[in-house]
Length: 370
Image (cartoon, rainbow, N blue to C red; front, top):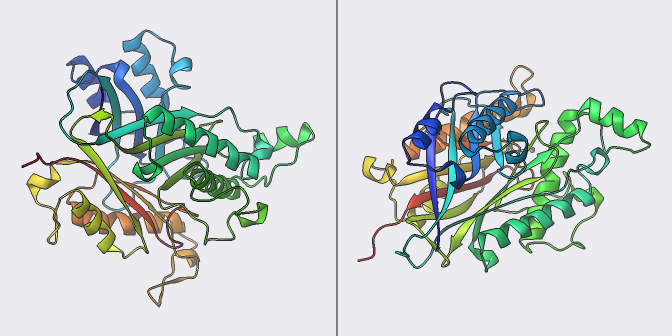
């Protein structure tokens, strides 16, 4: 029976994987068991955030050394999903998701992990229905890989989508193709929207007739409360990590999720912890904090310019990008409850949870029965 383990590790800089290397060398982690990485690097989170590629390159070189396989193969098999920007109290870190065989079952269900890669997405398809369909098919493949039989047992779907750079747009145009946009920043937003629609389709939350081309970044009634989408120049395919619970898995970990209505929704943070029998009154105790393996959050500045009826200025600030504002604000809210700055807070939550809000998922060890 498969067992999922999660290791939340700190980094001194975007290329620092010394904690993972130490765990591999001591035998705590087998390099062959590393199934996926989800982490936060201290870049700007934008098109030119090369901290993500730096980390990925270093990771694949490390795993290549221990597995005796080319990094060029591993990068197509192990999703490495990184979000740039560790504003405020966020601490640069990465969660290593491991899958091993042979453990005895101790709980009715436990954390299940599935991964999948799509074929490369052509520049002219990014942010369009073909991109949505590609993500949906890849999500279904990852659910199958996880062995999760009921869609409601999926709690978090992380997708890394490619975006269109100026160079990719120029190459497509030269080949007679027409990208949706040649603006890399707009491309990232459309890619995230397509990813969210794809997750919703893959989970049967929406059908192919429930939206049109014009729905992306326009009809925000369409959303998936379990989708977390990032986009970057460092990938050409859709990389998917599905996290859920399954009776077919052993292990002590379990995942829960809640939608966040807005950037002040501390109730959602408290509720998702309660779903895992962890109390926050007002902050999680040191003992319960030790049970938490990973915290995953998506957030978005409310495009209406107000939060609970009061004006915010995130979208009007010329000096600081709105995504950096919202990441820092929500990170402070969540970390204040968790008592730990090693939380994954990613902006750009278009169609991912309620408009102007997002979602939170927590992985924690289960309490022993009785």
